[in-house]
Amino acid sequence: ARFKYDAATNQVIYTLSLTDLAVRTPNMRWTLTSNFGATEVFVTASVDETATTFEYGKITVLATGTRNQETLGAVDAGVISGNQIVIRLSLDKINAAVGSNVLNTTSTNTKADAQIMIGSSLTGGLLLNSDQGTGSGFDIKGNTTPTPSPSPTPNTTPTPTPTPNSTPMPSPSPNPTPTPTPNPTPTPAPTPNPTPSSTPNNESNGRFDERYSGTLNVGQNSVLIEFVLRRSTLDAQINQNHGNQQVQFDLLDAQGNLIQTAVNQKIFLENLTAGKYFYRVRGNVSKAVDFTIKSGQGN
Image (cartoon, rainbow, N blue to C red; front, top):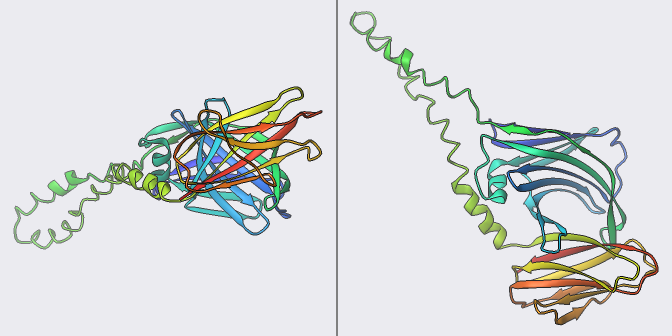
């Protein structure tokens, strides 16, 4: 995997080269992550039954210690070409996810993960890691080429040349061309600051999905996963790796009161109050059950 900042387009380019992508089957998924300060940002390419999607988001850790993959939206561009996956994500979206301007910093803890889903994204399944790798950091450096362009120094030299008024008089006409001193080009640096505020606003008005994973061990009555509801509609589904082990999937309020038990492994509720809630996975199992919860929120 290669992570690179392109100052010309103000995007981070993620390039993942694989051994063989000639055959692609539904439920393949590739994720590239790196840290911007304390925030871990990811991009994904997912081959589903109906389409290939490219998304981005950030990793958060819940109070229970569960890693939460929060999808924020679609990337700027994504393509699978030959044996390569190339994804472009603007610095504006990264700034919005991180909450600050990351230009002229170093992104660390680069990782690449390949996953395959056991089951189906339409009927439910469990994402399992098939391969992964780690790498070194990369710099988010602004384009340094505009800096030399403060060639006002040459501009000032030709200006005195008009002393021999007769001939050099025409020569000032070329000077005006440089006069639009490409100094304004560096102004893209401040531009990311205003845009982040718009991205969260757009995200706050739409739907977003989160995934939680955990394990219900033998002799363990239940597993609690805390999350924050920020929309009025909740749509959740649990998938498990041992279908012959019976587990129950519940939604609890902040006080631990039961709100709803899943029907056919799904919970759907509208007109909920924003705040803290819990997912509870319970059951008397004879072998450890790994589970994944796909949780969606919308207005």
